[in-house]
Length: 428
Ligand SMILES: *[C@@H]1O[C@H](CO)[C@@H](O)[C@H](O)[C@H]1NC(C)=O
Ligand SMILES: *[C@@H]1O[C@H](CO)[C@@H](O)[C@H](O)[C@H]1NC(C)=O
Ligand SMILES: *[C@@H]1O[C@H](CO)[C@@H](O)[C@H](O)[C@H]1NC(C)=O
Ligand SMILES: *[C@@H]1O[C@H](CO)[C@@H](O)[C@H](O)[C@H]1NC(C)=O
Ligand SMILES: *[C@@H]1O[C@H](CO)[C@@H](O)[C@H](O)[C@H]1NC(C)=O
Ligand SMILES: *[C@@H]1O[C@H](CO)[C@@H](O)[C@H](O)[C@H]1NC(C)=O
Ligand SMILES: *[C@@H]1O[C@H](CO)[C@@H](O)[C@H](O)[C@H]1NC(C)=O
Ligand SMILES: *[C@@H]1O[C@H](CO)[C@@H](O)[C@H](O)[C@H]1NC(C)=O
Ligand SMILES: *[C@@H]1O[C@H](CO)[C@@H](O)[C@H](O)[C@H]1NC(C)=O
Ligand SMILES: *[C@@H]1O[C@H](CO)[C@@H](O)[C@H](O)[C@H]1NC(C)=O
Ligand SMILES: *[C@@H]1O[C@H](CO)[C@@H](O)[C@H](O)[C@H]1NC(C)=O
Ligand SMILES: *[C@@H]1O[C@H](CO)[C@@H](O)[C@H](O)[C@H]1NC(C)=O
Image (cartoon, rainbow, N blue to C red; front, side, top):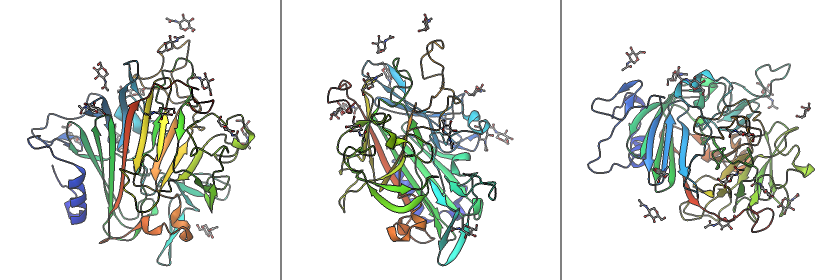
């Protein structure tokens, strides 16, 4: 292991990092620095620039670009291996593709949208770079999405540790980058266990108070896009047992400050029972539900658990399942919100990976169709820095010498062969 940024690493971070990368006695820690393989380390990237880790019944590939997951393989109920996340075939293409939709990456330093690209800390107003919703007077946009035009998911991270079942990426984000105050040093560790994928993200501001909110922006299709009856994810069922409320947003998806109730049987009710993502797509109430002229979901659900709770024991905040493959994922997390995006912005311009889809192009184009996937983001209440009445600022603004920012989540996979429709039309 090496510590090239050691001057800016705090003791607290080192402690956090150490606990994030469990070392198995006798196992050699391996890794790379930039493009150079550490001496004695046989475990570099593969020929496509990807880094592999494995656990029982699960295998994944990652790229330094955005610290992103690029492939996630599981066997379905028929014993056929499925690659259940969106991504590209090789690491170099992530930089080449300029329209990439934060594929599998870590959005940062502040995930989701910042109203008016500005916020206040200790009476001082900060302006960050806008990158969404351009208007005549604001050609670059009127808000900031996922940390700005060069957010963390557009940068190559450094691989600092890589074992058989775990990989750690690091990024140092300089003072003033995208307009944010102060340097932030971050470590992201992914670990595979027995059909589980664990995420641990730590970020430490070394100089100034700054907003920090991270997430994992993974695009899921639990059929590996190989469902021979549909190219879409609308038959996936979603259950959000703690999702009785959501953040109200305006037509460009900026929080209004309102916290809204998800009434039973309404289009945003995923808490009373599992429901197919597409169950309410013919209901007119779903038009505009994900911003102006958008049908579907791009929604920040709250994960209201009774305090205090142990996030590993409190049960999943989400369950996503496809009856076709039988693959089910339960999401456990210490985060208080959960964004669901039903891929309304996909339009068939992103190619599938060689590991996905149907191979007969007459039958089906090898692309991600609109609603062909679903993004699930564990995070805090979006734009909480601009809604002080929510009381989320202490979970979103960090300073040197204080606690580090920490995000933890565990995705537990299983096979569930319950047939579609067995429990009624919405059950999936
Ligand atoms: C790493 O990159 C540097 C600069 O691009 C280059 O000079 C060097 O040869 C590379 N090393 C390896 C092992 O590829
Ligand atoms: C899927 O099953 C095959 C055959 O048993 C096995 O070789 C492969 O490793 C399994 N895939 C995963 C991701 O565990
Ligand atoms: C990398 O992947 C892209 C997209 O799939 C493809 O167009 C390109 O040819 C690949 N490049 C290499 C070197 O394999
Ligand atoms: C990221 O690394 C890839 C190699 O994997 C390289 O092709 C690309 O230019 C780098 N991109 C950036 C933004 O540094
Ligand atoms: C938005 O920011 C601009 C400066 O960039 C400021 O002049 C304006 O008052 C802000 N608008 C709102 C609604 O906060
Ligand atoms: C994985 O977990 C299953 C049950 O959840 C258990 O039967 C199996 O033995 C475990 N495999 C390993 C390698 O620990
Ligand atoms: C679709 O896939 C299922 C499961 O793999 C298979 O049983 C069925 O025969 C396939 N149908 C067609 C029309 O290929
Ligand atoms: C999708 O779900 C509906 C019920 O909501 C069912 O009628 C249909 O057969 C399902 N399609 C696929 C491809 O599973
Ligand atoms: C709304 O979407 C429809 C269908 O995609 C499109 O024809 C129409 O121009 C859009 N309207 C606006 C105001 O964007
Ligand atoms: C590909 O799919 C088309 C349409 O379903 C079918 O007519 C054709 O026979 C298929 N080709 C192969 C090689 O399976
Ligand atoms: C399997 O899925 C069905 C339908 O959503 C659900 O009722 C059941 O609880 C799931 N089983 C397990 C073990 O998670
Ligand atoms: C949404 O779909 C569910 C499941 O099919 C149904 O029970 C509910 O009435 C629908 N709600 C609306 C508003 O269409």
